[in-house]
Picture (cartoon, rainbow over the protein chains, first blue to last red):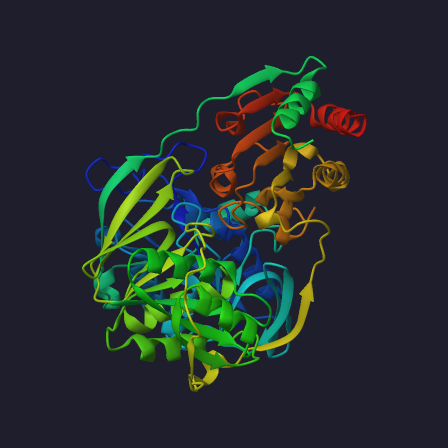
Length: 253
Length: 317
């Protein structure tokens, strides 16, 4: 079975994000990291591959040129190779361009299962998996919190607002997985060493025949008025009394 | 000009996101229609009409996950450019259909809208980034319609003096393999007490609780206050409580009178879902926790001491 996993490199979420004062786009440092939410998709891909001999997992990522750290993390977990779509024109491009580039790189009929997270931690548009499924002409098993494969049937628990649905489909298909669907493995030392010699193919939008689009323009960015600073107390054993007094004042108790 | 609102459901009252979107379109002076996916639902249709829906384009199906079919039908419906905007909510089917509609029509999706403006057919959307500290105003330059996904409670639902909507049946398109999913089971996870999204008081828990069993004391506190229990993504991912408890970017948006955050650090993804609560109380042992930045009352202390003491104080009152 051939499995494609989409993964994004993003600025380290532990550092405060900055906006370019002119374009208002998030400033992307040279060294980006693997979006934590994508580790779940990679893990599911690896588990599906391990269950059937001869399977491969290929990571697909896109972004402005330069960053490799996140790709190495994915390969160190155990993916067999990666395709990195690098193009300066992707800077500020919309999510549909991302999906078109991924669809062109993945290609029609080349992969049995395409896996993605539900949304990226830096952009949160949250529709790239569905755009990709539509472009590839495949069904999308989205918001999976559990994935099983039995022969030609992939069965998921699809997270819903009130519980979950059990949904089945047959490859080729796209899976979008939630964080928490599985416990992602940590790269081993051996994995980290092996990652250095795994194939990483770099392609441009021109190679893929995709034109970057931006059909939306940021007009302005305004600060949101901050909440008035409240009072913070060190608990000296009377913290609960302060809360109780406030709840009483608000007539909640 | 007119707007189109996506809605789906199986029975019962109209989904709140659709009522909110219809109310917004009405306030902008736009006439509004609805694209409804699901079995016929008289109560929902009447409610949509009351909120201003003129026409309900109804894709009548009991298929649990007709995303590809709905996107194909919707693409046909908007192909002539008659709709200025198609408004979706943040539901899973909403996002499935919005993404597919975008790919089909070659138009971008403007996601996480907290407001929209329409000026002579030009659509501008507002979203919040960086944990809700910045508002971004984005103009849509693609040809109509603009595809916008709005956050829950972005708009206020207000019934208008709308009449009975005109329900028009939409034919189910054949989309081949892309539409070949089967929903084999549906499970509802029961929760007691008021609905989290609508509760006046929300008591939420994060990783600082230490373990899943500690949610019992939050259940007790919420019950005493007539509230609902919420949770951060971290503890939902860890399997402590179901996803239906999740508050934040990828969960529910709540705006209760009182929000009590227990052992919640205040990650950006969580703040987005609760920062508009009227009063925020935070209990966390880390004085640097970002949750204190939005709290009206913060207690730097041990949730395992403060919460039980608070429960006792309420019981004794």
